[in-house]
Image (cartoon, rainbow, N blue to C red):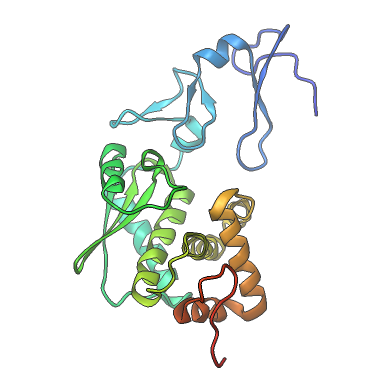
Amino acid sequence: MPVFRYCHFCGRRLWGRGWVYQPEGEGPPLVLCRRCHEAAIHCDVCGMPARADQAVSLPDGRHICPACARTAVCDPALAQSLFSQVVAILTTQLGLALRVGADFTLADAQHLSRLARETPLHPAQDPERIVGLFVRKGRHRTMYVLYGLPQVLFIQTVAHEWAHAWHGENCPLLEDPMLREGFSEWVAYRVLQALGAVREAARMTRQDGIYGEGLRWMLRLEAERGPAGVLEACRRGMDGKLGNWYIGNW
């Protein structure tokens, strides 16, 4: 662990306690003195601190750091273009076409939080931290994604929510939250790989909780049976025990 002697924001000597932040990816640590730590605005996407004069304020009250702001998806036209690009990969490369289509829209934090409270969520999900949501009311289906997400996270979220729509049509017995979220993360992982975002995809495998554990389980299944085996296992359902799929006559 390197020794840090100066605050990266103000340049003052660190005579006492300092706060060390490790950004996602391979960037160097960010070290702040007490004064800068207390004055910093924390990014609502990645959690990294930013100077007040550098943080980007969004209309719904959120703040994002300069790094996240560089590729933030706020323009509806750009969002629709990226959505179409992701759907093309999902349908042509992964075979995840939907029988009933889904509308797509960007949403602010308050709207998404309100929708999340009206939609059944598993206990690990916090309605205040939701970045994407698939909502089905009768035959009307809509995918909501939080605006202002960095482009890679936007793409990951679209793929994840599309996967929920797909297994809603094809895997009605897939009820275990870890497997549902694990499958959706596996789909997002495959899309990022297809787009060349290999480092970001690898980062997904190091997640904690049901998302990371579920993804790692799906990757083991893929290693044994290939992508088609993952989809077939989802279609056939499971017998209620984690990791013990009902495979019938393969």
